[in-house]
Image (cartoon, rainbow, N blue to C red; front, side, top):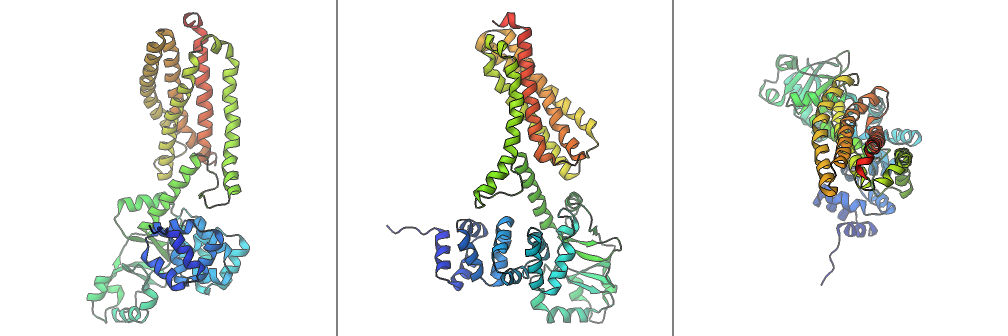
Length: 451
């Protein structure tokens, strides 16, 4: 039986034989997810050799498909001239994303080798916050002066068709010495007489966004309007670029993934298993080492009440349940607050409103969860007091957990601390300590009825 050749083995063979045509065909014939999977199974030398065997266009296509961390690593490793020629083929937002991740010396060297117009554009865009309209926009768009005629524009489009073929040509933007005037639909351009100036057929009062608008505002904009893209202007109404709907959704998804990783203690952004082991270990340990200290503090409560625990050994079974269930309830509240903060639905100063909303949920859920665990304790040991102890502890701890979980992200945001990274450890420590304290204190008060 003939052994099946895995996709990355096939790609490795093409690299080993320096088969440039075969590599080009491989890129054309395979889906993005298959290319990403195969590329991730290559060693670093093979990855660098692959990029060296590709044309600039194919190299740019590869960088667009693979995760950004891998793209940055590739650009860091290849020759400056190769990196520059590949970056010249990317859209402006992707150029900036990669250049901004390089160290200053590498970035400067690559910019010196790039086309002057491309390099100048990157230097201008790199100063924008990545979560702003200026940081998400692209500068590949068609804009013409309002005094130009339909005939002049159609001639320009034909003469520069090769340059414009990669543009997302849905609209033409009309300016007056750089100042945004409006939008021109391709249909109106094609159906108008050659002598008609653009000022006569342009759609004025078109919606725009400011270059400083935050990602949350862009998300709200595209939720409200079903546009393919929107022009970006500055305070002087100068047209600077275009924000595409798909790029906003990608940025929203990237931010969500980053927050998810941070809530799980993955510090430093994206982590892939192709990254160096020591780097991955250091990123994880930076959170885990702090977390173990917080857990020791929480466990000290048990040590303080060890006499009570020895008397009521059955209580040991319920302590992790009380801690875990309260933590789950609190993490639900954390997730909601993080999401609302990212969408701009809630602001850091709305602590009291969020607190009241969470307490109401916590009271209901606390009573229900407390009753369930209390009944379980009663049926297991036949002791109603044990049920009251563990049920009461879980009920109260649940209310506190959701109150803290809902408000701590807002408080941390106000203090300029990353709420996605810090909320989890704080919540876990508080709910563990309080849960242990409540259960053991109640047990101590009812000790004569439990032994």
